[in-house]
View 1: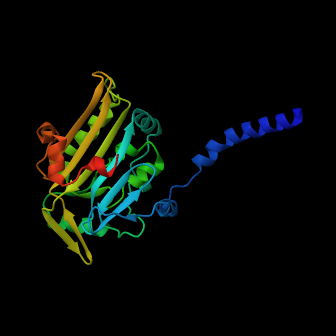
View 2: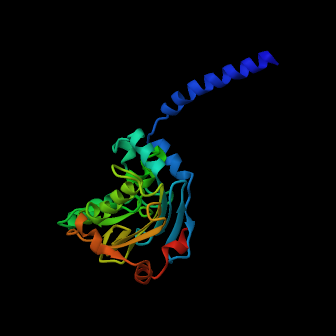
Length: 266
């Protein structure tokens, strides 16, 4: 029995020493990414005729696959996620920054390139759930860069304006360079409307008229739940300072959308 215990103890120590090396040795290449996406197939959704549901371990999404834009996504961002992302410090290059389609969906790379030949203002691959908020895990960072289910055609002014301001707010709420207000933030985000379309071959995508975001958290300083809602025009003229003017009530947001994001994912 004593020999068996010594053997098991030695095996456990060797496993602990070896495991980080095997994990670190994982090669993040195109084959790895393809296999990752194949783990999470899409499903039919009743939210709209072309809608599909996509669930992965990090966030959930219902997207209009005919218009190539997400209608509602949901993610829970935590203080632990922020601290892990800071310590992991993933490079936003290579596969960690490359864009992919969910399994069975078309690659939209050429469509975005074409859209930018038609516009004098840059059209970005506009995240709903931000890369920086998901960069606490290699797989989460990769899956954040997913066409249709987590991004739509977004003018760069809005992308680095009100949109990024909401992302920074989530980080600050969990204690980034300021006193933390909460340990966990629930985020609903999606797109709405159509200001125009872009077509290349068989692909046609909307340029949405708006992005929206709901940020909800328990504020331990006031001892209650806070819900912040933003209705953000997808315009090249948007700036970070305009976010306060984009606030709406949740009831107004629901009227704008025609559905309640919290009733889709909660």
